[in-house]
Length: 409
Image 1 (spheres, rainbow, N blue to C red):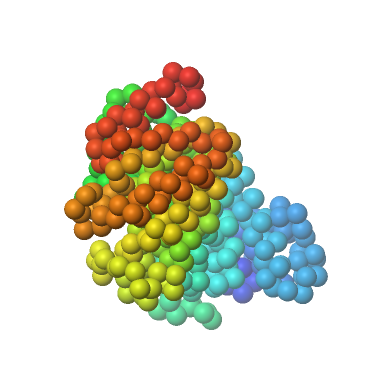
Image 2 (cartoon, rainbow, N blue to C red):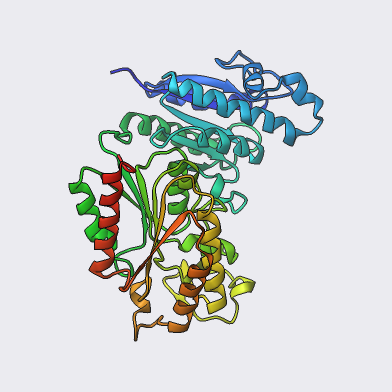
């Protein structure tokens, strides 16, 4: 078998030694290397496979124009556009199998754009001085990116930073050797949920959809799960989506850090992918359990899920705001949308007598949905709870009708 080729990216004018070290470790382990220079001012000690001039031109600019900005932020944005464009093109051409990018905050900004241009299943490693940092918003993170802290390497090689760099080099090469890329043998249904303690529809829906010839990918709605879901939806990777746990929309509008980004619940609509939407945990805002409660939520009932996550119950007015936000997002959809509205509740804890039961809040949400639903969205009211078998049956009946009409392949 041919050994994988790893694209090694960075500013070779200032980090040639570190990037060459990465490439050397990859080659020593039997891998091959394709180098890309994203410098602006200086030149590498030795020519790279992809020069900075090629990168700038691919971004619709030139090195001279980037320098003329007299602003390193604008210059590196030119290089980021070019690096992302070339990476996507060269991957389609089969020129590399995985990518590793080295940088500080400036290089990480570029790295996020480059990695976002590559599909799920391509190993993506970023060695960064700001790995795991709150500087990086969730919406910038590709679905399957890996980050390794560039420890002790701000200026030159040493034994401390070599420990990080060598691990990263081995990780990307090992991932490129081992990865089992997503299969396209069966169409994929994208589904949002939480664990079956609180939401149970996927337990019966998944096997039923698989019997119909579909693969089902269930994403955990804890911020990064929704980010991965939206990333794939933007690529048109799903035959249909069952977006039954929209909590990340509420998290975002209420100021929680547990967010999938502003574009949550929009990308399937942009690609015309058929959507079913419902209300799983719509009434809760997840927040970082060890941080202060965001100002809009202070004074409301808080339930600690564990030491990482707490859930805040929405007020009736906040639930109305949630309904309007969902309707606004769905109003832009280019494909069919059905909103399944279970009138008896949206998570196991809000059943009558449950610890989160709030009939007034549920009534407010239902009323606002009826008022706000846009003309392109079919509102399907169901006299059941989201965890009842009747909800699953209704979702399957609707899905089968979509198949009969040719809306879902």
